[in-house]
Image 1 (cartoon, rainbow, N blue to C red):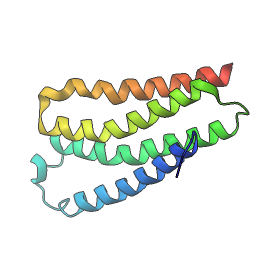
Image 2 (cartoon, one colour; image 1 turned 120 degrees about the vertical axis):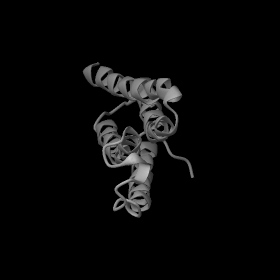
Image 3 (cartoon, rainbow, N blue to C red; image 1 turned 90 degrees about the vertical axis):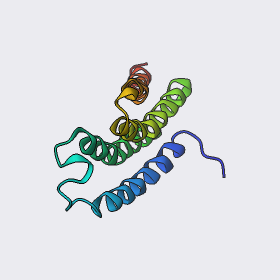
Length: 130
């Protein structure tokens, strides 16, 4: 099965919704433990929650992208690059959050999803204004 822009972003979005449900279920098994991951306000626990919620937020971004591309007669290369950047950002955001929760020395990696998502949004805006 071959997916093209924007269908790949729609598929990615729904996979990320499912991943959000599953990660929430797994984390929910321990939420009642006040000391889990260092307590409710610990940086480690906050990063795990951020990784979990990023599944839903970035699924929403990819769904918006899907509808944006469908509204444009000729998407072109800007939106192909934007599609890849949004998927890369979506893939790496929860991963980076969980890695940073485990090891502060990988904080630099947070730039990967952030820069990818900024690029995806900027390329989409550029294409919309052409």
